[in-house]
Amino acid sequence: MNQEAPIIVGLDIGTTKIAAIAGRKNEYGKLEILGFGKATSFGVQHGMVLNIDQTIKAIRQALENCYASNPNLEINEVYVGIAGHHIKSLQTRGDIVRNDTDAEISQKDIDQLINDQYKTVIPASDQIIDVIPQQYIVDSLQNITYPIGMSGVKVGANFHIITGDKNAIRNINRSVEKSGLKIRDLVLQPLASAAAVMCDMDFEAGVAIVDIGGGTTDLAVFYEGILKHTAVIPYGGENITNDIKNGLGVLKTQAEQMKVQFGYALADEAKSNAYITIPGLRGQSPKEISVKNLAHIIQARMSEILDFVVYHLKQIGMDNKMLNGGIILTGGGSQLKHLIQLTEYTTGASARIGFPNEHLASGHIDELTKPMYATCVGLILKGYNDFENDRKALEENYVKINTSYLAKEQAAQSVAQPEDWIEETAPSSQEIQDRKAKERNASLKNFLDKMKTKIIDMFTEEEDAKL
Image (cartoon, rainbow, N blue to C red):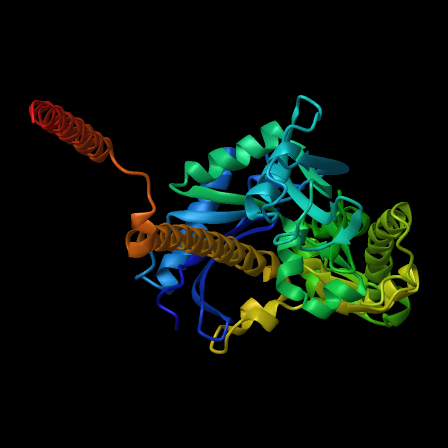
């Protein structure tokens, strides 16, 4: 294991469960899971914290279970996933004009471009969660994915901005902070799940991530390596459970158990002569539940969720022909039997289940390979992406400082070393004064010599006249 890499903790605050996973990347770039804990969630509905006290208790229980799996862990900061039907997104365009056009475009320019987008006018009740660049424009060049190192006067970009309700975000922050933790960053859950179940080929081919959670179904669409769209559909596994509870007249715990053990997303695949026996309440006779009827209830709600997926894909012009990578189903609700067939029938695109085991090192417990933990694993990967970007920025600054220092040293040495250049330099003020004094003395000596010569000549002439 790479001891220099930090331990990153992902905290998934969901409607049905709260999970905490601690991990660290090894020398092969795979995640070594160092701790894992989960707890039943009671204070969250549809991805939003509605009871802070219950949510705090659930978070602490998940942390205690995580510590129990590894007593040597010390957890202070976490990456937290956020969802809920209050989440919205919008597209913007931003530009900056650079003063020093001779210098290369740097990370500082990109940071300024991104920071400017946080000033985008949004409703007063909302808050910007994340600003994600899609593609850059340098002067007249478009569709640039990495402008750093290029030259240009005007740098712009198209952005995907994710916003959420301030109160909903504040309730998450309070729940986590009162649990004794500090939030390192809030990450949209479908983006975290995408990081856990996708590879580079998926990003390029074009895929739609459908994360079916307990309270919501989260959608993220990628095409040619760019995040094209995000959306939160306000239905999830809890809605299916409630439909079964109300439709068949059973308890919620019984409805959940039937959904997991006997549920089919495609009614045609359920046997018409199969029945489930439910114990009667308070001495009542047992109840017989048709597996076929159960499947019809599940299919109705799942078809509604998938219709929303189709609607969002059409809204952005991403029909099934453009999604060469198809649809990746993940989250706890993706484990329903025959959901892949229903998805392909409804959307017209190929579908598969997304498991987070692609980024996990060997030796982890089997439970972590389930799609319901994709968000938590993706949060750890997001943390490592931030860590590596920060380290890269520090290294670049270090190189710049050293380069500048060496340049100054070389310039100083070139000034001090050449002797012939020193001779041609301008004389000092003292040297000028000495030289002028010598010139004055020489002039005086010449004047006295001339006077002496004239006096001698005068006496010589007088002697000649007497003779």
